Amino acid sequence: MAYATTNPYTGEQLKTFPEASDQEVSKALASADNAFNAWHETPIAERSKVLKKACDLLRERAQHYAELITLEMGKRISEAKAELAICADIFEYYAEHAQQQLSSQEVLREDGIKAKVVNEPIGTVLAVEPWNFPFYQVARIAAPQIAIGNSVILKHASIVPQCAGAFEQLLLDAGLPLGGFQNLYASKAQIHTLINDPRVQGVALTGSEAAGAKVAAQAGEALKKSTLELGGSDAFIVLEDADLERAAELAVSGRNSNAGQVCTASKRFIVVDSVYDPFLALYKQKAAQQLKAGDPMDEATTLSPLSSQEAADNLYQQIEAAQQQGAKVEDLGIEVPSQGAFVKPVVISNVTSENPAYYQEFFGPAAMFFRARNEDDAVRIANDSPYGLGGSVYTEDIERGSAVAAKVSSGMVFVNHPTQSRADLPFGGIRRSGYGRELTGLGLKEFVNQKLIAVVDSGASV
Image (cartoon, rainbow, N blue to C red; front, top):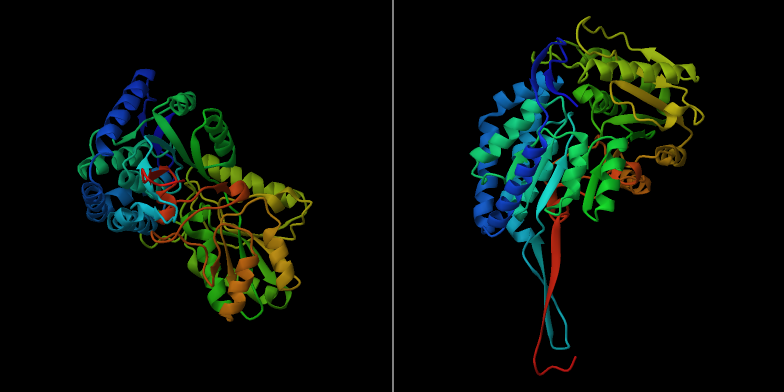
């Protein structure tokens, strides 16, 4: 695979990077192991200082990093700044909470055994990360591993090489020892080499189902722990007592932020019959009002290009295939520039379960609409999916919303807001959306050895 910076707005290839040599891979493994051996002996109070410094640097350098994100994968500059803000929050969260979350837990017994569970680091973790959130996806795995005392080798997406390098330098500048976090422009074959190396003890991947299945299989064969955050096709359930104006406004942002290239984006709008028509009309109206395509570096732009021309072409082909199988596709009339990897926003309806599109994820500004008979039918449609990442329910009755959310089969469900990520909330899905959790104490303990230490009184009879 070629690592290169190609501006999605202009199509211009700006910089290329050579893949790592096998010698560089060997050197990275040795450096990561050396760093681990020193870093995990460092008191957590000192590790927390590095986390806090990284937080401060992210806030100080936000404009520079945001421009890198926008340049390499086309995210709107304002969204890139928001991405960096949550990255800073993640580092700050672990700086403030990791010590308490990693403290040993006493196991109470009455038979003379005194026991406790301690949380120990395990070694080097390989992180395989995607392009759609070039800093945030990395922060989700890097911050907790630094807090624990593990070292990290990053294999980032090939279209964001400068973001990958900048993240490595950020952590070095924050005081992380050399080798504690390394960016490696690895090939697919070298990923297999890394996973099989005994110094790598865990693998975290965010990406496509195909990539996840392959990496998980390799990790399983090597008997290594893995976590996967894969695709999603989040349900957006609108009940008859919802505030339709507010729900429609959130629907537009929930579907079209980052040009729709978000795993937890609202992708399937499931609306009860009595309010389906007015809600659909509001969605179209607000999309026309809110979405303005243009240069992602321009703060006035509200719809950016996709990450690459290939991504745009693939999405157009997917929409056309859905239409050929009987779906209705409505162009919302939003003009996009002739240059750049833009996709015109559309609404897709009349999608039956016989249409392959019914079970697919559309990674871009294409909103699928489904008419539900009632609340139970809405839940049925929501759960009729191979995915289970996030979802949301809209109603003025909060208790009802919570009850419906409990019936939706996914890792995360929000009431009256599209699924969102926060530093203090766990993140992850089920089924083909992956397994494991990131963020908070749940994510912190994915790659630790929860070791039991039991002390038996020499005079006890046990």
